[in-house]
Amino acid sequence: MIRPTVMISLGSEPLVEATFLERPNRFLIRAALLNGGGPVEAHLPDPGRLREILVPGARLFLRPAAGKHRRTRWTLTLAESPGGEGLVSLDTTLPNRLVHKALESSALPEFREWTLERAEATVGGSRFDFLLRGPSQLLVEVKSVTLVEDGVGLFPDAVTARGTRHVRELSSVARKDGWDAAVLFILQREDGREIRAAPSIDPAFAEALSEAREAGVRVLGRRCRVSLEGVELGDPLPAG
Image 1 (tube, rainbow, N blue to C red):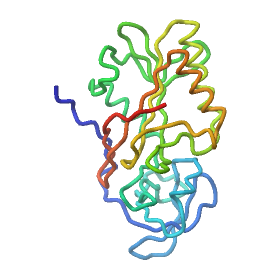
Image 2 (spheres, helix red, strand yellow; image 1 turned 120 degrees about the vertical axis):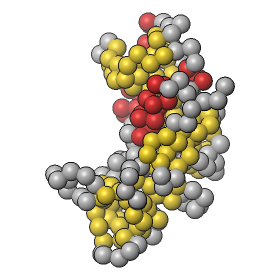
Image 3 (tube, rainbow, N blue to C red; image 1 turned 180 degrees about the horizontal axis):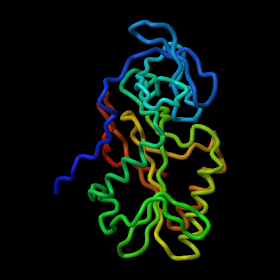
Image 4 (spheres, rainbow, N blue to C red; image 1 turned 90 degrees about the vertical axis):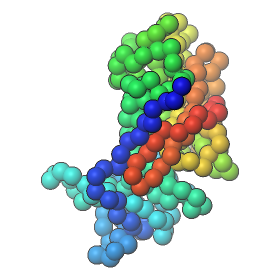
């Protein structure tokens, strides 16, 4: 069976190439446009460390920003990977949109027995990314991965109390309520062969993920194919 292509477009206007200058705060960068015009400021949608990606002189691609109330005229959309082998998407909201589209079109064999019930599902006192219906009720949490070291995608690239809480909540739902649950890591680049927790960065998250697996939570991974036109959901990756 041929699965439909699932892709998120990066917009109708061409991206503009730039080079990285500095990062004044978590959500703002300064860059020099390749076509000149002086340094510009751009919104950064990814609040992670990104130390391996945002280095002086790094090749970036900016999208013109819409909205008259925007502080910046640009949004940082893509960066070249540190080794220059490809591109990295820096929009942390994109994986959820990509997975949502894939679930709607039944493009994820990992969940072939389930159908999408709704996004942003509140169960108990917690909100999860997706609720699926099928042989059982299945909760899915999606995590964006941008850091790769020696071919291994690592999550997180900065301490994430929120991410740890989400994984522990999934463990609780699986143990106490008998629901099925899954964590789906989306690697927003192509140069990774697997995805793992990063205990050297966030030991609490790594421990929570290990406990979740023991509780029956499925740990899954996917890579993306990233181009100047869009981000396409790629092949499954081992994850754990």
